[in-house]
Amino acid sequence: MPSKDRIEQETNRVLKLIQRTPFENCKPVERGFKNLSFETGIYAIKSIANEVLYVGVASAFRTRFQSGHQALQGMLIEGVSPKEVRILTIPLTVRYLDYSLDMERWILYVLKPKYNSRIPSFSEATATMQLRPTTGHLVDVLKFLPDHVVEALEDHADAYNLMDNQVLELAIAQFLDLDSVSFGERRDFKGVGVLRVENEILKMRLRAAGLPTEIDAELLDPDQN
Image 1: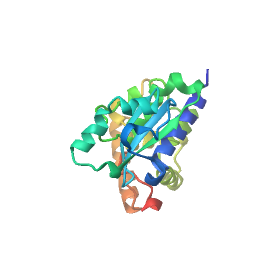
Image 2: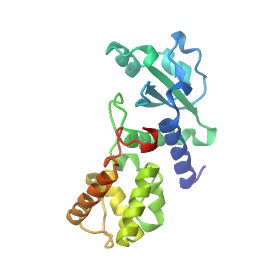
Image 3: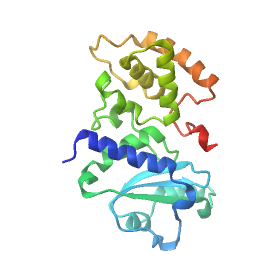
C-alpha cells in the first residue's frame, strides 16, 4: 500500500502530464480506437488548443472508447471535428490502481474540464488525499498549483514577511474552494472575512503582475503564451 505522500506525488505527476503534454503527442481519434492500448489508468481528451475537455479513469483505454464515450460523442455532435481532439492516456502501475478514482477527483477539481458532468468540491477532492491546512502540509497544497502561481505567492509572502500558515491560507482562500474549507478549531487561522479582504489585495498584486486569479482552465503558465 503506497503512503499518502506517494499517492500525492503520483497524482501530481499525472496532473502535470495532462497539463503539459502537447496536443500533437496525444493519440488521434481513429475508427475502432485501435491506436489505444488495453492498459488501465487515467486519460484526458484535449483540444487542438491544448484545452483539457474531459478527464476519466479506464480499466482498459481502448475498450472504454470502443464501448461508446458519451462526452466524446457529445463533442462531435456539437460540431467539433475528430481532427480537433486527441486522447492522452496515462497508465498507472498496479500499486496505484485502487486510488485511481481518488486521483481523478483531485485532477477534476483542479482542471474543471468542461465536458465532465460533475466537478467535485474541495472537500470531496481531498477526502482521501487528506490535504490538511497546517504548516507541515503547506507543500501538499502548493505543489498542485501552477509554478508561476506558487512563485507569486512566495513573492507576496516575502514582501509582507508572512509565515508558512499564512501563505497556506492565501492558497486555500484564493486558489482553492474557500467556501467548502472548514478551519475547525485552529486558532492560528484568521477569520474568513479578514481572509477575504487580504486576498483582494493579493488579487490586485497578481493582476498587476499579469497573472490570472483563479485556478481553472484559464490559469495557464505565461511561458506557454
